[in-house]
Structure formats: structure tokens, C-alpha cells
Length: 206
Image 1 (tube, rainbow, N blue to C red):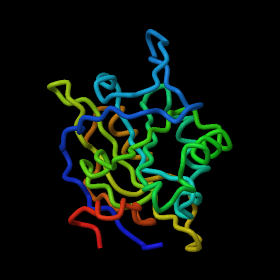
Image 2 (image 1 turned 90 degrees about the vertical axis):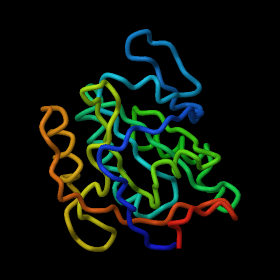
Image 3 (image 1 turned 60 degrees about the horizontal axis):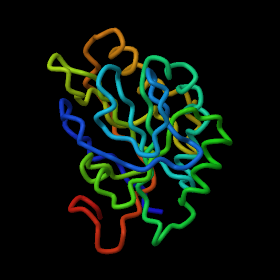
Image 4 (image 1 turned 135 degrees about the horizontal axis):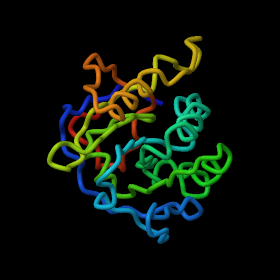
């Protein structure tokens, strides 16, 4: 495990395009048509804020926040679109495969889909670096999803005895929903480094 911090993608960055497969069992239904999708594209998310969570099944930093992700899901799923993204290499870390991701999702009652970023292209497009890591987008005046928040859930880490409240991310979500400016003193997430495929490490890794 390499303790890693967010690279802090610049605020205002447009949502990168993605078209990723859904972990079977966490399938997504379109909120209007109720059509079931086996793949999800960024083109589906145009009207509501979009929270992207870079997660995995085995990381102790992710396990530490799982219960708060369940509460966020319960509190905001009707107002915010949630997506979990798994980008860890299954070559080096097969424990983060679809079966364990599904078990994680079911075990915590998550209602949001889990997507597989198998080629790690989407993680790279976000300059993601660790698990967990959070990116909150919302439609700007031109109707394009724009980055309003990135970084930590809150200051709680395994063993530091800081209460797990989700306060940083919750404040950002509340501001976006009220169409207010999100605070600028955003702190990076800290967690396990994303497990890149051998030879696929981005320039900011290591």
C-alpha cells in the first residue's frame, strides 16, 4: 500500500467522456425511461449534479468510509447522480474484480452503479491517484458538466479517531444544489494509490 494524495484536478474542468461497463448486479436504470443499461456513458448525465467516486473493494481507506457512502446515497440519490468507478488493475489486484465489487455494493446497500474502468483511461482523464477519491460535477450555464469539488470526503482516516461525517463532500453537495459557489479551500483525499497496470503508470505516479 502506498499512501497517496489527490492531484487536485483544476476546478471548472469539463467532465471527460466515458463509456464504461456496469458491474453485473449494480445495473443502472434511466430515471425517466427506466431502461436498463449494461454500459453507462457520460452523455446520460446532463441535468443533475454528478458525483464520481473512485473506489475499490480491498483498500482499507475505502472500507473506512463505506458506511458514510451509504448515508450519502440515502440522503442525496434523488438529487445527485452517483457513480462508483473501479480502476485498479486486475492483473496485479484480482481482489478488486467484479465479484468483490458486487459483494461490497450489496453488503452496504448501495443503489448506485459500479463501473469498470478496465483500461484505466477514465482514471487518467481525471488525474485520479488514490482510493477513495471524489469528484463532484454539475451543469454550468452552458449545460456542460463542470468540476465543482474534488478531494476528500472529510478528515477521517483509519486510526486517526476523527469522526466520519462526510462534512467536506456534504458541504459541496449542498452548495451545488443551492446553486451557490463551492468553498475553495478543498483538501485532497488520502488513500491507497490506484493500482496501475504494469507499464501504464501515469506521469504523476510515484
